[in-house]
Image 1 (cartoon, rainbow, N blue to C red):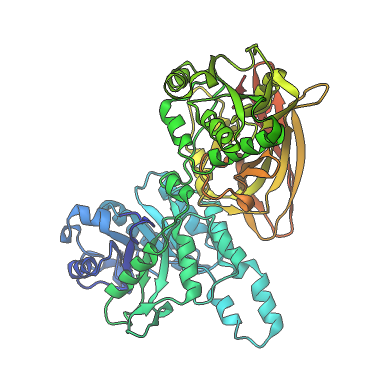
Image 2 (cartoon, one colour):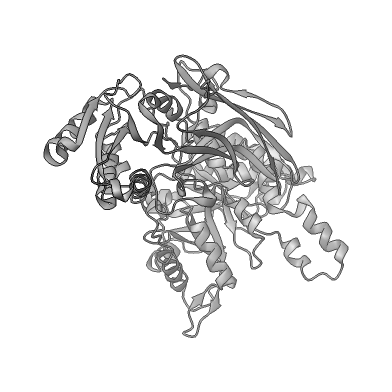
Length: 630
């Protein structure tokens, strides 16, 4: 099946309750613009008997032949639907046994056809036997995905809005047995968060609260199911969604979900629904440079850079230099510092010494020169860079553009002996967690050539932490096993990731702060802090997302914290700290997490642990799985 792309068009499927003519139905759906269809694997009214009964010996095939369609059509255009009467969790042992046989028969045929996905409707809370059977099939190597179809809001809760009995209303809304997310959570937990288990989430007429919708955003939604009864009719007679449903669809469209239209055609032609959804998708285009830059990297795990140990490649420098926000803010900070440092009366006689440590290919050197020109102040620049390949670029620019105003130094800033002290020390050594690229250690080493009244840009930075739910990230981490490494290595490693398919369980909280220049008598960059988060609704913890903000100078700030993100800046994605096993949390729980930043002579590493609501072992003890090399 084609995947949806919010920048172009919606990937839509058309649902059929029964299909007398499969070729005709498939052709009609294709002509109407649909990318795939949902067909019953067996006619929904054709019950089979496997243990006893008259139909046990009935001759003939139980469903249509695979020769009706080409193999590529079965593989790409059809999602199979299991028979609705199958109830493998029935209290009646005969019904349960018959249902198990029917389920195995239909799943075997789906596998034979090579269907990309099989859809089944979850109708109640306790379907543990069904979860066990499907999990076993997936563990045995089935090729299809399982799409679990359920509504955002259960029919019982939808009906309760019309109840006059207040006690009955509160009972339904407060109980987990009527909450469809609880149904899903129990089912996928029994299936051990299987990667091939996804959601076919039906949008209901009554939209749940914003908090519940946000929780669904952290789940592996494969498609949205829209009933034709949700659509109103506009003045021209075409189907449209009401504004609340439009906003809901647009927010979920960021997850690259597909859409399935089901129900009776109420507006003349099924094509109109697909055209309207296309229109809705095209109007969801984003102008934020971060969204454009990150497209294709959503929820993609990357190992954090270690520029102190490794020399960055030219392409990496090039990507960071395209950031439209970061270097403008650095230029503003240097401009402000120059104006404060050199009075107008001194502008012709005083020359400020600016040292750019970790100069890369020179964007901060250019920012400093532009700031000096704008401020009408004289500066002398030292560009210090340890990467010999980047030094080539710096030297070329010095010869061609900068001249004697810039001195290029090919050396590790911690080992360099400067000929004079700096008025302004400029660096961009920050990682996704602020200090995770060893900015504290580097700047402490470089501080020796900053004047006592000198200015450091940045002057401080703070890391932030937030608990998150994301089945997708959990499964991505689970797939990262490597030979010859500790069994838990992948769960004790932080990853840089553009978070998309996730639910934030509580507001972000500040963690570690570093100041520069560091005036402490004894410089110690180890840190420890315990944070407590209040959980507002039932959810699952899969790890912690990390962010940072930095004060460059006075009120000039760069931030990747969600609440204060510098709009348009894409130089840093958040960092993700996984936990070994998903942790079920209940509304009202207090989540207590402990975080350490630890150092040795050769390495820096993080350790993290949870003590409430239940204790969890320390992750990454002694840096056994992940360290940052000094």
